[in-house]
Amino acid sequence: MLDKLLVKDLMTKDVLTVDKEVETVFAFEELMKNKISAMPVLDGEKMVGIVTATDLGHNLILDNYQFGTKVKSVMVTDVACVSPENTLKEAVCVMFDKAPGENIINQLPVVEDGKLIGILSDGDIIKAIKNEF
Image (cartoon, rainbow, N blue to C red; front, side, top):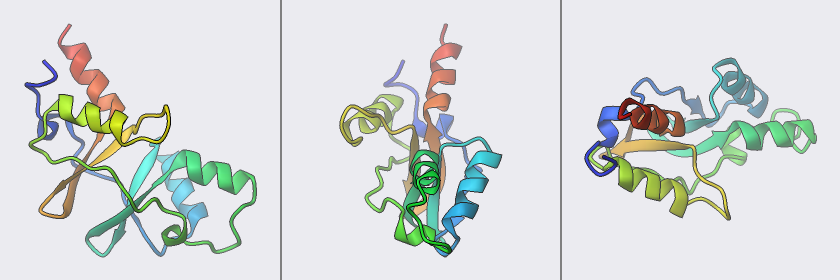
């Protein structure tokens, strides 16, 4: 089943993103308001990074950011991505293989011809597996 389903069939197409010039506190607020764990960071239409609720929240609570700190200065720039034509199995492998330590990536941007076209979450994968039962 995992090697028959394609990322394009499961991904969320309406992706919430943030501009690289937005202040971290406002990016974190958007993540919390929308109950999502990560947002791709854009420079115009180009994806240049990603921010996570865990990273932003942790650093905001510890007061590690100066007032006015922009997303561009704290985003992760080495972002693991998949193609819409990748299989679900390939996407799951990326989520495990590209994550630091014992972690997994729970939001995987979907990129085609250098452009962000969707995002695949661990929740999307769980729903797909549940539908197979």
